[in-house]
Every structure is written in C-alpha cells, then in structure tokens.
Length: 396
Length: 106
Image (cartoon, rainbow over all chains, first blue to last red; front, top):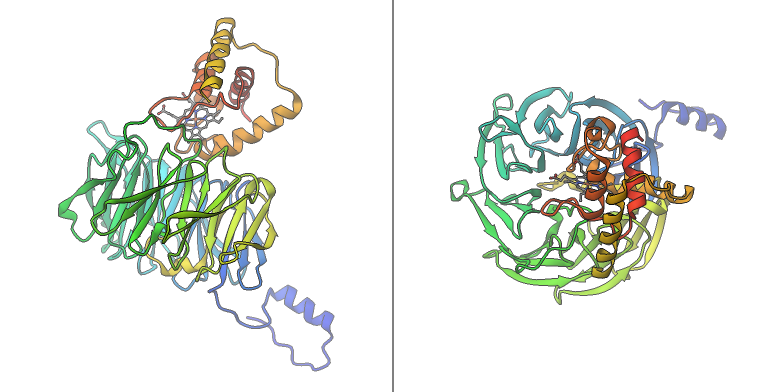
C-alpha cells in the first residue's frame, strides 16, 4: 500500500523520501505499454515502458539469461522469464521486483503460458522434456520427459507453444517428433505423439489463430505442418525441398520461428542455409515466393498490421536489419543499427519497433513509417525484448 | 569464399601434421576470441559453454577428446549438423588456442 500524504505543507523532499521508501507510483498505472528487455550477460532484466520510451526498473540476479525468453500473465502484470540455466523467474512489472524464482532444470530454452493463464510450461534441453508449473505459485504440476525410441533416450525440446484448450505443443529436436500435451487435467497430461516429422527440427510456431503448428527442419529442406483442428490427419510436409538440392550455406546462428511471421494470408519464414525469406500461402500451404535477403535470416517478424516484415540476420552478417514491403514483396529499406542485432519487437499496434543491438549496448527504437530512428536506450548486452501485448496472443 | 576454404584447409592440414602447439594469438585477439566464444558460439553452446542446442564445451565434456579433433571441428564444422565451419574468421592457431581455453575452463 502506498502511504498518502495529507499534510499540505509536506515538502518535496519528504515526498520524495516517502515515495522512495514505499516504492510507490504517484498514480496507479496500467500494464499495456510495459515490457522487459533482457540483459543477457549481466543476468538482469530492465522493465521498460513504450509510451515515454524509458526504463522503469532493473531487476538483477536472474542467472544465465543468454537465449532467455518471456511470457506474460493475462493481466500483463507478471513476466515469466525462462533462463538458459533452467531458472524460471516471475517478475512483477508494476512493483519492479522479483516475486519468485525456481531453478527447475539444468539447461532450458523457452516457455509458454496456457490459454487461461493458469499454467506455465518450460521446455528443457537437460533433462530433455517439458515441465509444467502453477502460474501463481511456480509449484511443479507435471513433468513430461521427452523419452523416445526403444532405448530410453531423451531429446532436447524446442518450439514449445500454447494452443487453445489448455494444450501445449512442442517438438523433440533429437527425435524428430512433435507432441501435443493436453492439460485439461493438469496433473495427468495426455500426450499425442507425431513421429518422423523430419530431421533435426530446430523450432516451432503456432499461427495466431491457434490452428496450425509448424516445425522448421534443420536437417532437411522443408517444414512439418500439423493442423490442430484435425490431429488425425497427422503431420505433413510443406515447402519440401525448397533448397532445390543446392548445398546449404553454413548457419552461424539458428533461425527462430514465432507467430509474428504471419501477415494476412501469408506466412514469412526464414530459409535455413540460404539467404532467403520464404513466403507461403496459408490457403493450401503453397510457396508464393522467396525474397533474397542480406544473410541467413534469424527472426522474420511481421508488423502487427501485416504491411511490413522485418528481418535480422545471423553472425557475421548481423549488423543489418531489412524491411520487406508485403504487397510488393520487395526490400524497401536496409538499416545498419550496429554489430549483433539480436531481436526486434513491435509496439502493440506497430507504429514503432524496438531493436536490441548487443555489441553497441543499446536498444534502438524506429518509427515504422518513416523508418527513422527516434530514440535509443542504454542497455547492457541486450537480447530479447518482450512487450506485454504478447499476453493477449496465442502462441506468444 | 571458396578460395578462403581451400587456403584454410591447407593450413589446417599443416597444423594437424605438426600438432597444435602453436604461438598464442595477441592479447587483443585473445579478448576478441573469448568474447566470440561466449557470445557467438554461446548462442548454441550456452554463454557459459554448459551446452544448448550444441553440446557442452566445458572441461569435463571435452577432456576426453583430442585437440586435433576439436580444432578440426571448429575449423571445418560437422556437415549435416548446425555446427558450421569457422575457418573463414578463425585461424588454425586461434582454434588451437580456443581448444586449450575450453579444456582449462573459462
């Protein structure tokens, strides 16, 4: 509770002291313009707001945050941060503090929150599998080891997303399988397993309507597609052989798949081992085109209105961001923010985009119409940027 | 690109023939290499090298492997896996130095 000052004579310095001690805002605030920026090397998170474009708080001691990602409670107040070291941290964005932290595995990579906001799932490399936690208490609710084959091997898990109906969908990197876990009864998850989806699936996404799950393959040219409205139809292959038999270029950073890839009736996906963005029609899942780009794409993200797609790239070509105009499928701008552009996140309605530039220790903000830089914030080795608008999106 | 690859392979072969006890890179280059090891290699092997999509590169994990093999993997990659060839920007001497750092622990 915030103390209220009733003395008309209260001096400003007293007011400041009271506010500092109580950690209070002078007025209540909403969460719609909040977000977090990961400081990967320092193991810290900055809580930011995108209206005035400032950092509000720094929350330290969150462990190894390389490759960290975040989901949000449905009211946007709490951020769940998944660290590389298996740490799962629950942050209060309004209070600017850590609420709870559990180290739930040895090596993990991402997470998801259930449709109703009651369960948080974490995908682990070591021990390979998925663990499900109560979103309120972070108590363990269920453990799903990713055991495959007949020798009891476990697989690293990638591409974990939430799906409508209290389900989580994820993919086994070593096994080449996609599993759908139903948590209607959270303590007794039921699993549906799809085998032989392809070699070395590296990530997965769910379309924003929650219907299709796509797993990108590293070991083959193609994408494994699962229609969650028709599980009996099984996994089928799309964009098969998009590399046309050519020898792939080396990949110095794995591409990522996220629901942001969707723009209208098209999906924009990173090719693997080719300097191309692949364009797929959702209706029929045929290739609509491919756009030559500056390097190996890492994130391919559509502006929320679907008019533009922004792309960043793998090492050593990672100082560039390219902007694709969706109607013409042409690159309209090549920006050079600086060395090691790691992530891009649009403001909820897409008028601005936040870009983390790791080696410049800076987050840059661009206006997405003028394509000019409008602000920057000092951040130590920034990586992921996650805004609370994700709270209201399936698969994010 | 192709040319660089041929050059590098020749040099690598020479390194393998003579063992990997080569001169250490300059101090400044050492700093760059460690930064790269943590950040860029770290995107797959973890920033603390405890593993990620790629296997751990901590002392216990690499102790049983010969320097030559590890240098070879760094320079030429493991085709068909996400481990790419780094010879375009890491020299055989530098790879050998990195392997020694991995075996000692960062």
